[in-house]
Image (cartoon, rainbow, N blue to C red):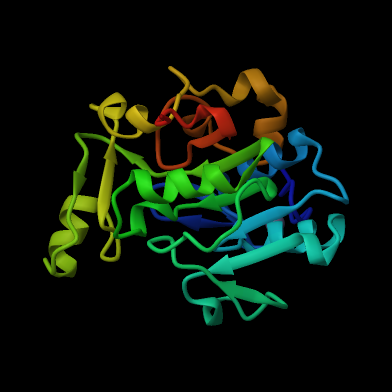
Length: 232
Ligand SMILES: [Zn+2]
């Protein structure tokens, strides 16, 4: 088994998940599946890409594939990413000034559950920013149970209990998926990475079987601009 991002072949064990974190680029199983999607799209020089909360391994690869002026790397706290040459600030609760129809690809993982704005707000703006044939690749942690959200000061313990982590503002539950994210986005009934990449490639990239299908904490959604449903 080898990290499909950096080539590393040793992995650190994470509690409950097995040996899934690449010791070389720190990629997780979901990061490696995200990279499989990026490669499948055929990203190449000339593409304009927006990468939020960048993963080190993916950042390093994309930096070599793209013209640096076409690669926008952004986070709410750019200082958290010292390995990025020019990480710009983005506030996903205030996106009106970002340009429309600009990006061929927008990539982020485990971001949406942190954003204290109505769920449809950042999703709307990210799709507005996509070119007509652009793709929005996102990893959202889907958890068992129903949708839950709270922007009030409820404290870290309550956030862990309700949302799974002390800096999350929402839980994207699988029980009522169509009633929250499914109202905004045209979602696949059953995401299936086997159909896209084959079991052999998934296994070779050290992506556990539990991550191959369905909605879970590592589900990668490959969305087209027109998958955003709320239009006049
Ligand atoms: Zn790696």
